[in-house]
Amino acid sequence: MVSDNKFNGFTKKTITFLRGLEKNNSKEWFDENRDLYDDYLMMPATLYVKEMGEKLKTISPGIVADPRRDKSIFRLNRDVRFGANKKPYKTHLGIYFWDGKGKKLENTGFYFQLDKSKIMFGVGMHIFPREMLNPYRDAVTDPEMGGELKKIITKISKNTDYKFGWTKYKRIPKGYDPNHPNKDYLLYGGIGFMYEEQNPKVLFDKKFIDYSFKIFNDMSPIHKWLKKLNCL
Image (cartoon, rainbow, N blue to C red; front, side, top):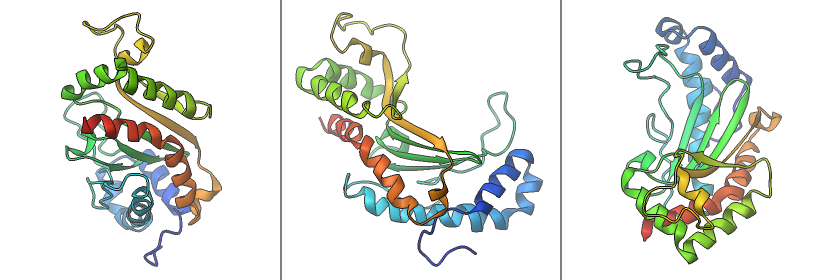
């Protein structure tokens, strides 16, 4: 076991498990190594969700940080019924903290991902639910909301390690001015910022909570803008 009920970082055995799963992506191997999964992946992930959730509430009081599997912590099991990839397990840990009343992925939030070699943080919404597309586009072209969005994107983008995304559409949607100053933002089917890097030493230390929080906080204005949009 690796826990004293406080997050002390992930461990080298966390990475060992993820490497092994990538190399031996089968139910038989997973079942044989379930103890490693429980002790060195799920245990620190659960503690990370609890502690990070409390810190994120200082940014977004309504944040949901639910450490149960398939809540904030994504399941490793893949749905192999569709698509060409028939491997039964994802080879990364995914964690999501969201704020809103809809289904988990229909809300803006904070995402963390860990695999054998790198970490990734994301803030925002990867894909808007259909009913949010037009309100988003109206906000983009609204002088106040659109102006605020542009300032937020410009400010966060000053740190060139923070990447803005995610483009989905190739053409300006019908009914919107193709010459609008914010026209590029009309092409997005979801917006947010992402940061990734090779696994740092601090990943294995309790200070990783503060390390993560700083990155989330840096990118949090995009979350607050989307939260405001959801409340209009």
